Image (tube, rainbow, N blue to C red; front, side):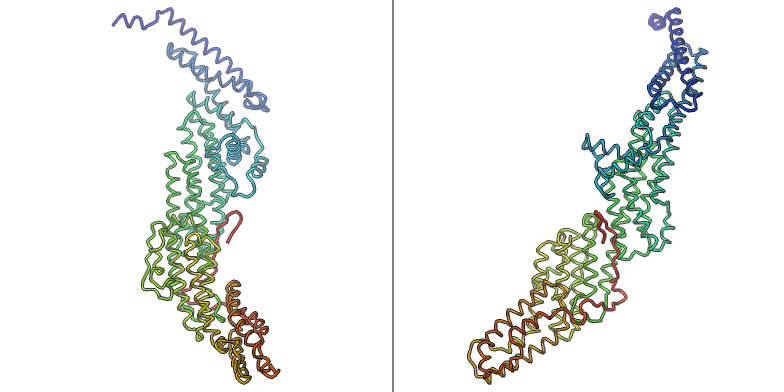
Length: 626
């Protein structure tokens, strides 16, 4: 044991040699450092970390590191050496110089180190050399124009500064961290960068509003703030927070713990204020259906950004930010379901009594279908929001609504696997139920069927020309188009039945002039009565109008022309009783169903629960807004 101890301890002469070597190394480092400190602290116009002196700065950093390591060696062999005191004082001076330079580089390169500039440069690098997830985070297509155009414009805006600034900061940070001065370095970094983050959020109009403040706002004030938030959220995530992460990762790459602590302290307060706004807005008390689309805009924006937010704020210390985003999404979903339920209730309570002149499209039909077509544009968002929302369909429903004559079509939950499709199909069915009831007061049964045909045609066209078709499917469209044709056929039969039966079944059969005159007179009276009655009726949809007119023309003109050609000369050359020739009939038919008194476009007064106000929408995709 003693032999082992003796062998582990160097002889006195060797220990003295080690002390001498360590003290000599410390002395040399101190001399080199003193020269640099004296030079760069006495100069007021030049700086150590600049283009002209960067090589000297790198040498200085290496000497400081060497001093630190040699001090540790000297402590190991001679902890009472007087040179340690001088070396420690000199090390403090060197750190003061590096801290000063660190602060200066951060401040003087503010534009070049702006988060947006950092994120754009990183994005260009990733697009040129990589297919990493950075590309998706920094995608700037939502801000308009091509990526290259935006990058070029922003590069010009943020071109001020030293292109080596990030590397300079990293060099200083690595040195200060490795020599035990991490706290001083991080404090400077957090102070400067937090002010930049706060300033940027302020410029993006991000306000730190409380729930109480938002709940007191009128919608006219809150809605512009929501619009502003939608733009701010994208820029904050994809440029501000992303840029700060890139900068922190680069500057403090030697310590993951420092990256986490500095980034979280710099961004968390602003991020929480930004991502709490949707939750607060979703808790306002007056959530009418017309406001739904602004909340869907926020939901969609936040959902689209969520993966990026998670990748930026993945640290444990940033869990509050991720939780806030999840809470805001949940509250926005609650608000959307509440407003959708209110929308359905408004349809059920709609109690307008005034008939639509001419049998045109009812305002309720227009309002509901416009609302649903806008809603279908958010198909991905509402698919998630409605996923576990149970639909309860009351029964029985009017038999007239059944497409096939059975009861299946009255229960959307039996026809669709998607909760969104069930909900949409149910709301349309609920609306058609209301329209069916509004057809009953028409005294003319033919006009009631025209009213039903017009309204169902409007519904079908809206479904066919929007994302509703993707939700309801082609079978739904085909079945309801068939129902429109059924309504149209019943309308034709009731409106023109007497005209069609006023002529003989066999128009080519020879009859006496007296019989011909009687039939012509009867046809004249019936046609004139039908025309006068229907001149104020309207078919707003041009395709449906043409289909009905073509059908009528084929039925009337074929019989009328043949009967006229066979019998007009039997009137003794006097066709006085044939007031309407086949050509006249065609001309008269072409004038019908445009609504001579403006019918079909007039609004009717609605009950207090109609909910048929203007729909406020906010979705913008590629510059399109509803």
